[in-house]
Image (cartoon, rainbow, N blue to C red; front, side, top):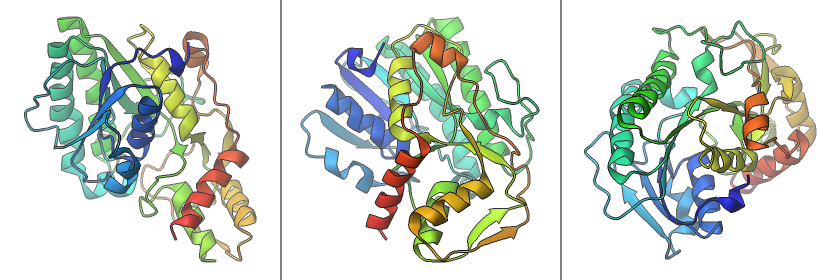
Length: 317
C-alpha cells in the first residue's frame, strides 16, 4: 500500500490551507486527484496554497465548517484536518476549537454519509494528555486535564473520535481516525508557538532559545512528507479504530535546542523558564499498528528534515 495507489477522484480537504492540510492537498494534486479545500483562515494561510490556485483541478471554498455544508457533485473521500493545532492557537481560540471539533466534525461526517464516501479525521497525540504510558499505544486511554488550558483541544479531539465511531456504528460511514504526533516542515507559521519554528527563528536571530523546565521533557518529530504518506495509506485501509502516525525517535527538548543552534551556527544561548501547566513530560508514538497495517515507517531522518525546515524559515525571515 502506497499513496500512488490512491483512487484518483475528487477529494475534500477541510483545513486545507493549514500546515499539514496544504501539504496533503499538494500531494493529492501531484497524484492526479481533484482537490476542494475548505478553510475559514482562522489559522490557515492563503500563502500556503498560493501555488495551487492556478491548477484546474484545485478549488477553494472559504467557509467555516460549523455552518451548514453543501458540496455539489460526488466525492471520492474527505480528509477532515480543520482545527487550530498549536497551543498558541487553541488557547487564543478555545471556543472555536471546541466548535470545530464538535459541530464541524458532525457536519463533515454527515456530509460523508450523504456522499457515501470514506472520511479520514485528524485526531492528535494530545488526547493522551500527560501520559502515564510510554511510548503511547492506541489502546491507552490517556491522562487528560479536562478543564486545564489544553482541555479545549484535547476534549475537542476526544469528542471527534467518539462522534466518528458513532457515525460508523449508526450510519455505517466508512471512517478512519489518525492520531498525529509532533510534525514539522515548511509552511509552518513562524509565530505558531511550536518548538521547531520557535527554535529556528530564535537561532536565526541569535536570540536566546527558550526551554521550559530543565528541557528533559521528550518529543519525537515527524517530517510532514512522511505524515502525508501515512495519511494517504490510512484512507485506503479498512481499519476503523485510531492509528498513531509519528516518528518514534525521541529527543529531549534541550538536545533539540542544541541541535538547532549548531545547525544555524548561531550565537544563541539556552535559557530556562517554568514549565507551562499540563505540559507533557513525554510524547512518543508506538507505531506498531501503522507498520503492520500500512507498511508505513518514517523515512526522513531528523537531520535531513530539520535542514529543510530551517532553510524554509531562513528564506521567509
